[in-house]
Length: 130
Image (cartoon, rainbow, N blue to C red; front, side, top):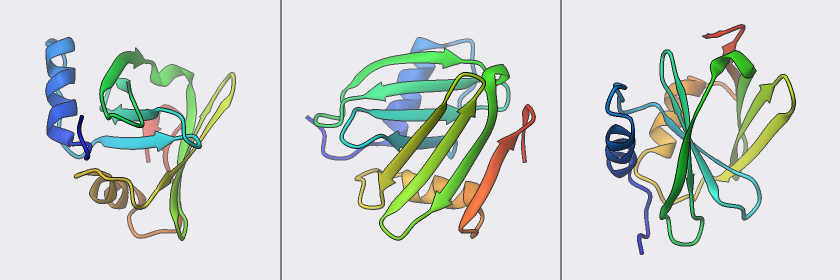
C-alpha cells in the first residue's frame, strides 16, 4: 500500500500500457469527487488519458484513453481548502474538488503551472489549450 501518489509511477504505467504514445512530466492533474476513487488526468497535446486510482490504497484500477473532441472546456479554480476542476463535455459536466492536502509529489506544482497564479482559469476551450 502506498501513502503518496507519485507522478513517475503513473507515467511509467501509462508508458507500459500505451507504448506508442509519448508521455511528459507536468501534465497530470488529480480529480476527486467527494470520497470516490481518484481520476488522474493526463493532458497530452493530442490525447487525453484518465487513470482511475483507489482512494484508499492508491493502486491503479484502470486507465482509458478519452477524446478531446467531446470536451468543450476545462476550468480550474483555486479555493481555500480545495483545488477545483470542471470538465465540461457535450453530455455532462464533471466536477472535482481535490483537497490541497492530497498526498502527491506532483499535484501542487502541475496545478500551479496550469492555473498560472489566477484564482480561476480556463485551460482548454474550443479544441485546444488556452
